Image (tube, rainbow, N blue to C red; front, top):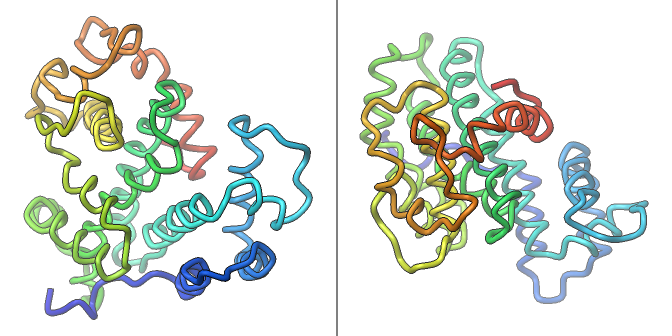
Length: 270
């Protein structure tokens, strides 16, 4: 990388929404009018607000959606939508690397979201956001090759991601002015033995999702035993039950549900 100017930027509509949310006098009506400029984001917000997590009369407008979700949740879901769009916009030359990276991210996010739905200690939208943001460094690596006619060899790309993706991801999040609390959580993703307290937290849940996503992709040869993970040691019964291979039964017995969730959330088969 030669400079921050080469790193991917958030869509302009996302920046407008975040500027609006930062205003102390922001109104639900003003925000709903801005959200309406992006039909796909509007559909995502409506879908989330209509989920069984919320108990309310039928929603008829974006204004109703904003009232149900609240400003903080609208901002997080907007970021989820924006990062998704960055992963799915690519040139023909780089399509294979983008598609592979996106499928890996979707599986990780889907497993993590499934766990969040069944271990209701952390809001699912926060789990989704951290799952996606913890992978944006791979976009930073790919951006270094955006002006080249051909993508890098896959082994080179994988090596560069291992060395630089986390640091690039932090740079990008700071550039995007992501909440520092989320950045600190994301620094812990992939650190299997790090823990801050005795309660299962956001980083723990995403680490469990990442671990099982690597196993499902058959990319977990160097993984420690699940029982060694700090996150696993915080799980109570029945969530800590293991299958014969030593993985969470909650995951391995619900692969079809996780795949269905990936299609529902991202329209991707994993």
